[in-house]
Length: 180
Image (cartoon, rainbow, N blue to C red):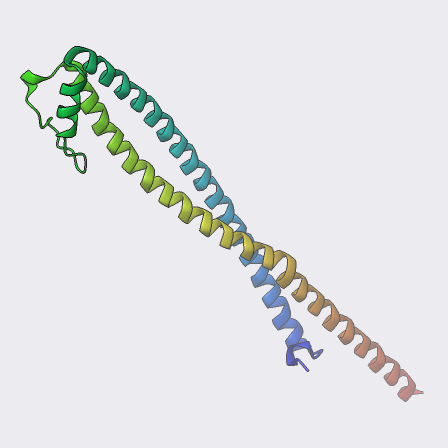
């Protein structure tokens, strides 16, 4: 038999303290869940903005590359473009300026911006994954407190109170019988 289920005033007091603590914990976890959801929505909004910006940058870079191919020729642009170290592009173009055109330079600058934005997007997506995980765990804890723990403590407190009241009534009736 569970010693906490014994109908004593001490167990009733402990159960009520545990119930209060569970309710406070539920409230705090609910606040945390709401804050995490707001942060998640903000991060997803930022990610969508970066994706849209990337689409615009990509289309602009493609337009500049088409213009450069028209001005310099397909082969010249291909040779110059393949000589660019794309792993970590330098700030200045690695090709000779007199062998190129403005459109190719602009495409190069836009591709650098694309790399920077992709890096921001990947960091933001990692943040979103982490936030989703934390949000899921917090939601489970809130639900467990609301649906399992708090009702258990309420039921236990109610049962102990009822048993203590029944015991008092029995004691009162015994005292009345003893006085006669």
